Image (cartoon, rainbow, N blue to C red):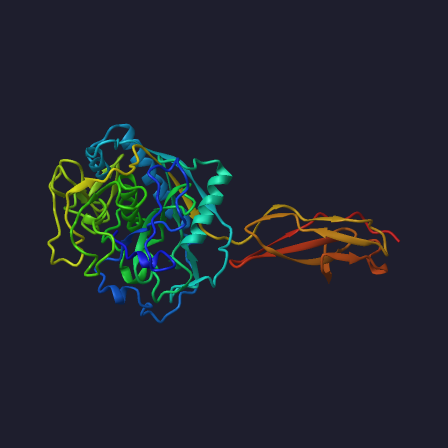
Length: 451
């Protein structure tokens, strides 16, 4: 979307420093971020003020529900890839093929769920959520996962979507929501390229949980929170395909309007901007009564339309009937046509999904005890291996010779055997804790302690 760039760069000056090819030299640290903003936002000043909400979120609710959310999104990516392979021309992705050098060629490279905790809960403050992460932290997470999986870097054909669960705030920079762009006061999703120039990415919060239904698509054919996010996915993906650097150098409009009355910012819109929150006429309804406007690889979806030069407006597929918002509509974001500005486009598009859903620690290998099982000797505990960056606490237990009962006797990572331990066996219980929760694992027992 059109963006007041002073939000993004630290100083108020605009310094793009982008390259014409992702394979070339790395761009400057400041990088354009193109937002899908909240529907029907008011003035620029109120959008960037602190959120009016007063009730704090207790934390995200995705722990038990994320698997369905993730599987729906993965199904969507797989469906788009299958429809692309089949050459389907009856969905919204076909709109991009009219613009030279862009093919109907989308593949799904895979997904990864990362349960590691967020780096801090105090970096940004969106005024509502307990957890908040910045764009810099999200870029670091994507880079870590990409490197760990040996996924493509510096590729103009790869795009990384990072998903965060409900009640996790995102702000573009550190600090509070006032004067900052956050999920609570400004955007539903955005796309950009990393500050090192090594990957194209999109940030996708749980759209159904964003600020007072500001990102609501109005339909849920999939039947879970993913429906609202799916529409923002297609928005950001289509924009990245046609303008991957987000600097309006690809296929974008030359809309002469200033940015909502604010001069000297970007002029023009990307392909998804012109049709944001414009869904057209539903094709039908699911058995549960939910409308859908797309059938992709046999599954029903409700996605925003995209702008077509050939059809002179927002359409559900290339050659469809256009429906456009009038300038008096608060959702109106300018007019076409799209014009090529000699920058890069994504000729083909391979997408990857990263779900950053912190989880409580999980044990991978059991704790162990080292040392001689003899009174007066010291035993040492090794906590084993765990996922999700925990801290550890140790509890030593004395077990009956038959091993039928165990009693806590000490804490700490080491323990000196006493006369009371003779003829018993010893074990250590390790409790691993992170910001999300805790879990415990117990070591194998020592042999019977001798004097």
